[in-house]
Length: 378
Image (cartoon, rainbow, N blue to C red; front, side, top):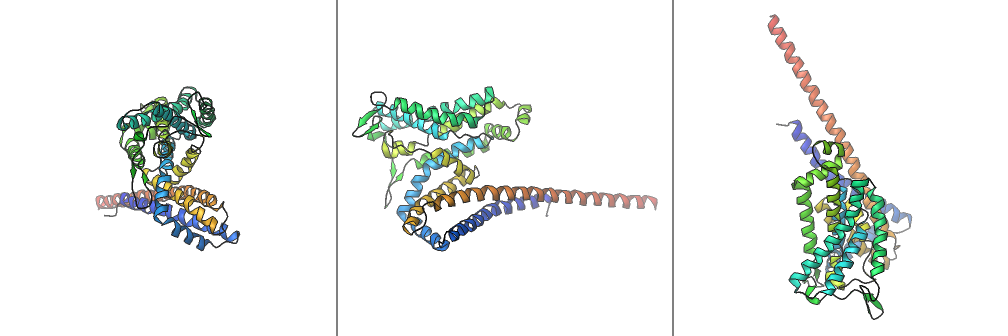
């Protein structure tokens, strides 16, 4: 039986497939026009990217690079799900990585004890740093956008104060670093034919699963999404908006604390001036690209890293260095616009379907009433 509910479910499925397809076609079309405007061949560029990105060493590089990006996106997405814009992931993961490196370098415990301890320190530091913005938002109504931006700068100053020889750092040749974490406390690696995969890939998977379970299958996740939809309605139903805001920022910061772990526990073993920055801002773009979906953000992170990896090869082919940035920006904008356009069209379509069904029922009811009246008259 073709009921209105089944028709609506089918339309939701079609719309869910139409949105990414529209975004992909739009992104390819705009990028191709940009390349043509600069006198370059877009089809050759795509062929170069596919050929280079499909190599084994490129695939491993893409996967390793995507791990911190994905963790940053998950941290941002926690706030997005309740309309909180956590721009401070960058400062949160750097503060977390710095103090986790200090603790890890000061201890010499067995790896199975020290690794979880370092991760715990990072999550606590990241959560507390984000909790400052959460408290100011809940208690004073201060915009989290302003506080997280300012906390990014404060984080850099705080690290700069302690990151000096004789305080919490030491000189190693021409570089200043925190004391090295023992080799036994480095994360494991997954061997491949070309180069190893960082074992923190497991952390990213666990973070994604936890994100999906907590936000989609728990009371807290329901409360968080309810507050994001309507604070007044959530408050009326018994949800503490202030507590939810603070908890969401703490959770977002705790996940942000994991962003620096692939570098700290898988590559450098210490915090130095070359520690990566800016991952939090990339996480915002990936969260938007993945629509705050745990699986979608995973594909978005891989796509982002694919563009970064293959962009280097495009330079050797004579293409402009900035073309990769153009592609990334166009893809994000295309996804956001396509999903919103399809969503609005879907809402109007469903409203029209429901209206048509109600009108049909009204006509049937009126017809039955006329029929009964005629029978009574006879």
